[in-house]
Length: 138
Image (cartoon, rainbow, N blue to C red; front, side):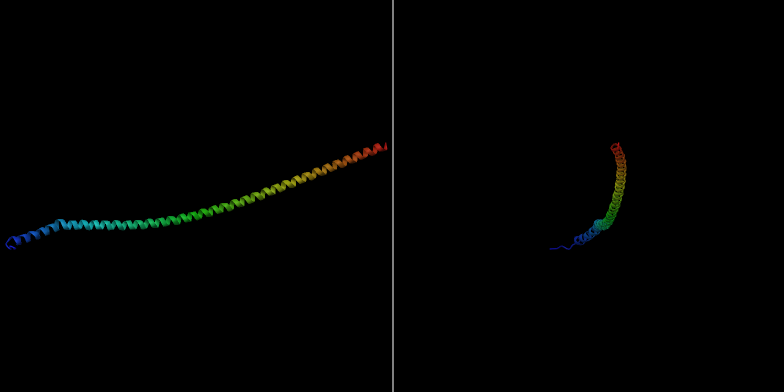
C-alpha cells in the first residue's frame, strides 16, 4: 500500500520547509496584525470608557453648577421682590402722609375761611343792626 521509497522523506522535508516558510511569512505577520488590531480595539475601548466617564463627570458638574445658579437666581429674585415690596410700602406710606398733610392743609384753609366768613357776617350783622337801630330811632 504505502511505498516508502525516497519520496516520502523528501515530501516530509518539503512539508516542514513549507510549514517554516508559511510560519515565517504568513502566520507570524498575520498573528502580529491580529494582535495589533486587538490592542488597537482594546485601546479604543479604554479611551471610550475614559471619555464616557469624563463626559459623565462633566455633565454632573454642569448640573451642579446649573442648580447652584438657579438657587442664586431664585435668591436674587426673592431679594428683588422683598426690596420692591419695601419700596412700594415706603412710597405708599409717603403718599398717605402727603395726602394726610394735604387734608390737614385743606381743613385749615376751610377753618380759616369759615372764621373769616363768620367775622365778615358778624361785622355785617353789627352794621345792619346799627342801621336798623338808627332807622328805628329816627
